[in-house]
Image 1 (cartoon, one colour):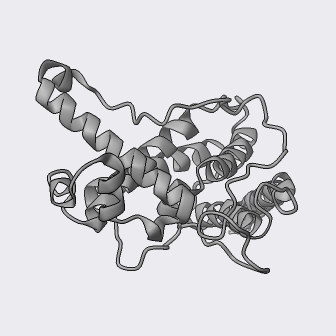
Image 2 (cartoon, rainbow, N blue to C red):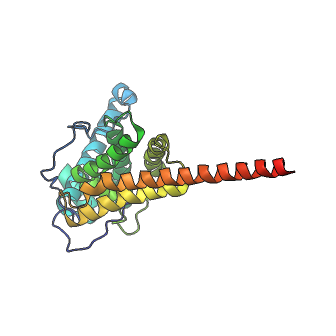
Image 3 (cartoon, rainbow, N blue to C red):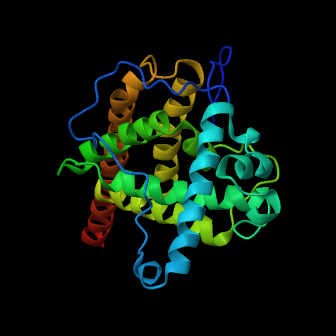
Length: 257
C-alpha cells in the first residue's frame, strides 16, 4: 500500500489530492491515452443478451461510482447516490452489489486490472535498470491521472474495507509482474525489493500529498534509483571480494598443509 506522508496542509481535490496532472511533459514512452475498459472477454455476453445487459448495467454502476469518487472522494460513494444517478431504486441495486463494501470491492477489482494493463502498455527500455525507472514514473502518472483509483488501490482510506481474495489476486498479478521487472534489473533479494518499493511509494506519496501535479520530489526519482543501483553494485562487489578472499584463504591453507 502506498503511504501518503503529509508534510504540509492537504491540497484540494479527491480526498485531499488534486486531479490536476500539472504541466509536466509526458515522456513519449508513456501511453498518451488508455481506455478504462478492463478488457474482459465478452464472448458469453455476446451470445446471451441477458448477460450483456447485466454487464452493461454493472459497467454503468461502476462508472457512476468512480464519478462520485472523483468529485467528492471515495468516502462519499453511497449506494443511494449511485442508484439515483444510474436510474435505479436502491433495492434494485442489490441485484448487482450486495453492499457498499461489495461495490468498493468491484471498484477495486476494476482499478487493479486497469492499473496492470496501464503499466504493461508502457514502452519500456530494453535496458532493465532504465525500465525500472520508467516503471516508477509510470506509476506516478497513473496516480495523477486516476487519483481515486490509485487511492483505493494503494491507500487505506475506507475504514473496514478489505478487498476480497478474488479482487486482491488482480493486485497480486501486478506485484508479480513488478517483481519480474525488478529481477531483470538485478533486484532479487526480498529486502532489496522492499527498498525499491518504498523508494517509489515514498516519492509518489509525498509528491501527490503536498504538490499534486508538480515535480518537487518526483524530479529526484532517477537520482534515488541511481543511488539504489549503486548500493546494489557495491553490495555485489563486496560479496564477490569476500568470496574471493575466502577462496584464497582456503587455497593458502591447503598449500601450507
